[in-house]
Amino acid sequence: MSSVFTRGGSRLSHFLGRRSSVYDWLVPHWARPLPLSDWLVPCAFSISAATPVSASGMEGKRPQFGNRHLSDPSRVFQHNAWDNVQWTEDQESVARKKVEENSCQPVPSDKQEEYENKASSFWDDFYNIHENKFFKDRHWLFTEFPELYSHVSAPHGTDAGTETNTEVRDGVLGSLAETFTGLGIREDGGEAYQGASSTYRILEVGCGVGNTVFPILQNNTDPGLFVYCCDFSSTAVELVKSNSQYDPSRCFAFVHDLSDAEASYPVPDQSLDVIVLIFVLSAILPNKMQNAINRLSKLLKPGGCILLRDYGRYDMAQLRFKKGRCLSDNFYVRGDGTRVYFFTQDELEDLFTNAGLEKVQNTVDRRLQVNRGKQLTMYRVWIQCKYRKPRDPVNGASP
Image 1: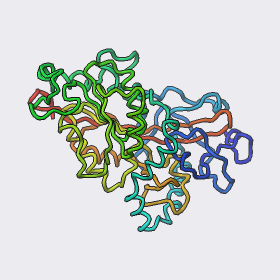
Image 2: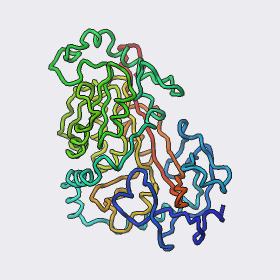
Image 3: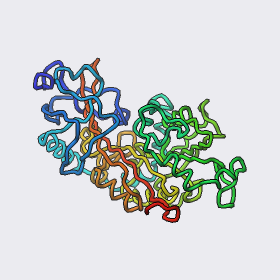
Image 4: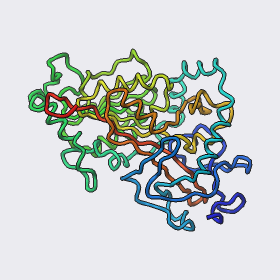
């Protein structure tokens, strides 16, 4: 192992990289070379099919992606990623020390206010620069979150137990939804809203340029599907609407600030089957997260669920921040003005359960990503969650 990950060899594992606004994003295409003084993570680590309990609460294993394990370190560059990488105690200790170091010089309060007040303009600038060229469509979503796939014909290999697709529609909507199909009115007989006649409704918050929305629209063949999608950036929303795949009869894109307690959603409470949060909750102030989840929880039908994937504590992106970029504990600002928080599983558990939701899944995804061309390795830590709204006891389900 030491021959693969040495500080001076040709296979130097550049764990970090000098900060750049682009490279701090979800899955960097590469890591930039480091001076030796910036080397952080110990070379030694082990591989396991499961990620054990740690002091930070990052336990659990990943049942879907976790199929490629590195048993022979000499083969590390034969694939572009390895699953369920178990960190050593020394590796986590060094990561914790690095976070303490890069947090010791916080951003001045006046600058923090500026980042909050101008948050939308920073995101607009990001999308004006990158448009739809930066992110790739997230087709992996259907493996990890089969709730997003058509419940008319589920793909081979997906979990047949995703009752949110069928039982919620049948048990909660029943014949009422069928009666109102095509009428464009709400089930409660109130004022019409876009997508009211649909029988399966998905909302993605923080849709960006549509890299989740368009795969859903392409692959979900349910005739009753309607997808809502919103983003803080008006530029991003316009890019979604201008996409040739945008279909107003199946999708509605709108500008929305997740952190704004007064901003309304274009759907009534208890109207959504699924809410998707992909690397978006981490972008808002930590003290506004609970209220945001509370409001989203109210939009779910009984049995509906929130699907989340976001940054985990000690992810590569957190460790490579320099001093002077920290806003508060585990909350940072990138060079382009956008912000990011790094979660533990326990923190997300508290946010969702405090909103009255019950856990279906809360796992840590530790991956070793590899750039075979440049002989570089990168440690990623993400957290994946599914939390469900308890079913309506009136319909015979347990609360």
